[in-house]
Length: 314
Image (cartoon, rainbow, N blue to C red; front, side, top):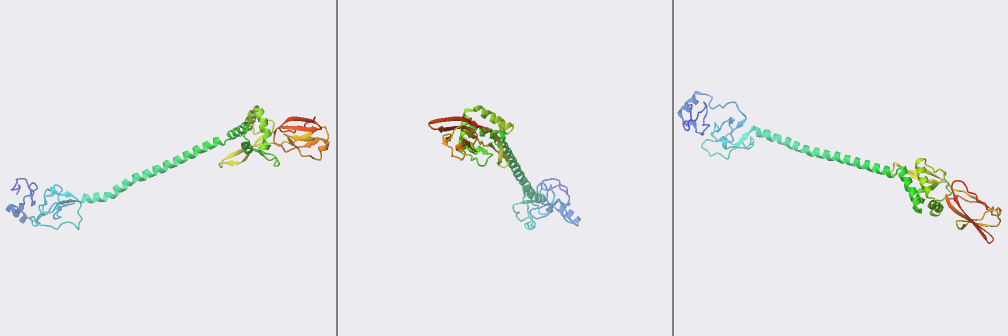
């Protein structure tokens, strides 16, 4: 038999059902005779990995109907069917269940799903790595910016400018914090630095020179003030202070039995008072007013004490 008796379409030797209309060729005597001549019965070509969803028999990729049970393969839905759920072979007359087209490639698709999920996880890892690297870069930039800001704020020039500005602004509290003395007996306080603030207020040019000298050489030209370090600030940068050289003036008065006043305050008497001599100090550099009274006569003199003792004679 070369053609289907139902539709006339060509059929292949061994086909039980017409691939065009699904006609059962086994009803035709010619097909029966042909099968009797083949002792092996229905033997499809080498398995392509596809099976009939109705009876489980092997089918070819281009088959429209199962050659074992006649099931219409074109109506099959590609869904994976496990071996346990594979339907038992039924006769052609039994009504077929809703077709499920079984393809070994679907198993490959199932096996590839974990890989796809793994691949989908990679972008998250890359995104997490990106944010970690970005955060590290931001932290480094912030630390670098903070260091540069601190390096400018705590530089020698900036600290000297600030301390000299405190003197120019007559800020006693800030000046007390900015100053130290070479003599531990000289206590730095608002009252002790007041004479220097008086001097600076009337000698602005001294402050200009003082700022330039401390930055360039670390010492004023007259040697009265030096720039020293007192530990460190923010761990890295030197903490600068202005060290004042203490003044120890000697006052001599050519008179006996006189009282001496310093900036309006009486100087304590000493054993040398009868001889008209006083050794004062330590005093903070600055402007001082010395006065004494001899009988009913009062004599006063204003002296700027800087570095060397300034003897006063009548």
